[in-house]
Length: 246
Image (tube, rainbow, N blue to C red; front, side, top):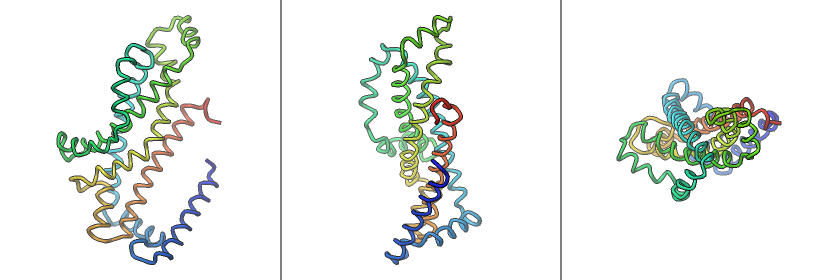
């Protein structure tokens, strides 16, 4: 996306927000400039940075954990038809289940700390990455694999130089598709038994303190978190998958 198009879209959204604030004319929808003022104030003199860093840690930790476990598993399933036939029914049953329903269960088993919240996001990302990487690894042309094997490449070399590079686009696509869902689930997870995190901050400011500008400032902070991760994935794709970037 061109920078000019991004800025034009941002200006259009701000203009729409301002018009809606004028039409509603209620404290529950402050204008964008008041919210940006609250964002600056909460960042400089409030607790917003603490909540932002807590949420960032949970998303980054769950993302790294899901990549480290799901990508190799997907590559193995994509290479082995026998293992794929064995595990496909399990994946088929578990993949469509909304992972957010496991929040209370994970809280019971792992407590109210970061681990339960990280595991919720991990479950979402894990299956997304696993399925896409498996499908990409299984779709590799047989003649490509045979040509590499004819050069003396073993299973480890195939994994490193064929399957892994071919699966990188699938990993990054899965991350891009899952970022919005992961941040949304993070908000839900941080509503339960915690006092640190953007989800708790938004709920507390809006429902308890009725500080609506600060509430919207928290929403903006969570939006920046999602956008930052999305742009990070785009940057990684341009660097690691240059053959696909036009």
